[in-house]
Image 1: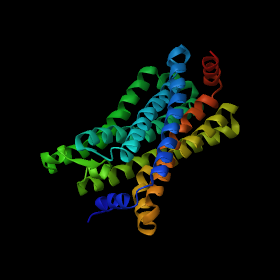
Image 2: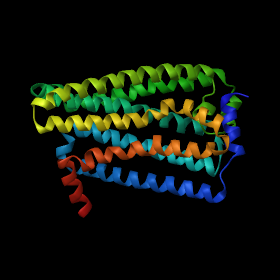
Image 3: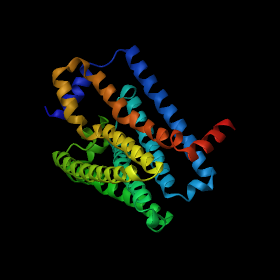
Image 4: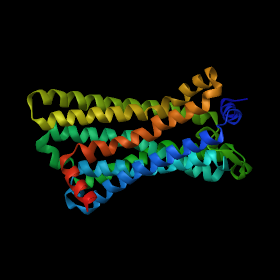
Length: 300
């Protein structure tokens, strides 16, 4: 029995009681609706006021918010399906997984781009207008999606090439390793994740320390940008659970098989839900301009 099938077997053997399952689903759905409602308010504020549409920083931010909404909605749907329908058609699972994986990989790339924009604004302010134009910002967002798709779509192509047609008409418990079971995909994923995280972390650290030096001799804006990048780093740290999660969960499954389902739930909340709640705090609360317009919209 391989690791994937063993994971599913453990989940089947130690499934939650009805009351615990209802409680977990209610918690997840309420958190998902609450975070998406706040994010929807942010998007409405962005679209309503021209001041945000002409600022690359806010465009990158709202792209992150939209990306988080898509990702959170998909993961909540998959969570509820795992407790209600349990098994779904492989083709439908592949669509859910591809969208969830692309939006998940978009997040660290978007955070890295936002850190670079902060660095340019603080350390190269005279060239900020020339470098960070609206057109280049939208091109950068397109590049983020292309990089994520190039990373994720090979999973589908490898599965199409290696699995029989009947596999796509069968029903499975919808997880990444059940939708895309080929071992080559796991090796490819580890290499891709490693390269992606190294690039993003180098970018975060470089921009943070350059802004840190600028903050010692420059304005209050530099210190605020430094704190913003710190929060980006914390958000990225939470999101990294997506990449190291399988190894951690395998250890927990081996040591505590009876509470494995509870560990999966805790992992889902920490890695998938909580990072989605940080973006509204970063700009919806900390940014004075965005906060002013957001409060006026909420009051209305």
